[in-house]
Length: 457
Ligand SMILES: *[C@@H]1O[C@H](CO)[C@@H](O)[C@H](O)[C@H]1NC(C)=O
Ligand SMILES: *[C@@H]1O[C@H](CO)[C@@H](O)[C@H](O)[C@H]1NC(C)=O
Image (cartoon, rainbow, N blue to C red):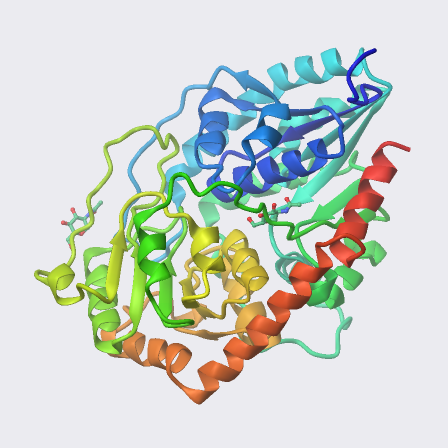
């Protein structure tokens, strides 16, 4: 007798080499593999290694089921981020993104190979890898799906802006950013060239939930957005931590804190703060008198294994002054476990979509501080539409230094005010609803099952 794996349909996942994207597609791969389908995860050696090393929370047994294809990494420059730019876009990653285009040939060979031994080959790829997977169009038994790692809200409003803002919605949220401000000129060409290769795909996948983005997911089914393709909203189905053998020191500290008393501060993997910004934030946190865990890291380089990383300095005596109520984490933090902890009562965040989804699912309200790209839209979704957060600094004013007094004021509002409590209550209720939706019989779970049934039909 053979294994229980269904070899009839093979799934090939092609992620884009930036942390937030790698993470989502690795998790999706594990989810699909749990349905006993063979899943091939295809990328450059270095970025596959990045995805695996940082896969905290994922079950090693699920990871072991994946067939990882390591393609020799195409050479690219890996400069340090520049913390002094007023636009926080991680332009230093562009060389690594552009290099990924060289994966086209090896990926085509892998697809051909897998297609010859399967009834159907299902390719799920990041929209920014469309050039790389384009040869799937000429493989008879191949079927491709785009996995959108951004919110349906961002996707809808950016497309809506490009279509000349047609009158489709009654309520246009306040404070929507404009694309030209969030996506700098130098990356527009790269993005546009990828989006030119989105014709052969048969479906769109969103990492989102009908519970909080139903309006926008519905709007996206209209022909002008969906190009008549099928659509699924598969998220956010978060991994459940199984073992606590490698307990991080900050989790032990959280165990000793009161419910909802700690603010978690982290700005993701692509934003670098200048010395001035770090100083204001440090002073603001100190003035707020709130307890906090602050993840203080520089942005990733294209090659995250290159260890020449700037050590960000803090104001003199800061760490002494905050001893007992503030913790600084300079390494990789167990973000999901921190957000899931009952002592965590708020998240000061750049509003990357991974962070938003984790915070929403764990029922933690957000103090939104968007830095670049889709984060600007996400902050509007969080604070104005879902009302599960407040804004620390409107994206419009991203060129201004945020003063420590503003930061302290915003932190107090979220962590220690009546309004903050109301927002927290809404966030908690939303979190409950979202978590239920991912259990058997819930909308997110049903949609995942429908997707699996569709690709194995
Ligand atoms: C950023 O500014 C600081 C001074 O504020 C300076 O020491 C540093 O070299 C600058 N970094 C870059 C990459 O320009
Ligand atoms: C969606 O994103 C969340 C947050 O990073 C992740 O945990 C989840 O696995 C993703 N869902 C899918 C279907 O990829």
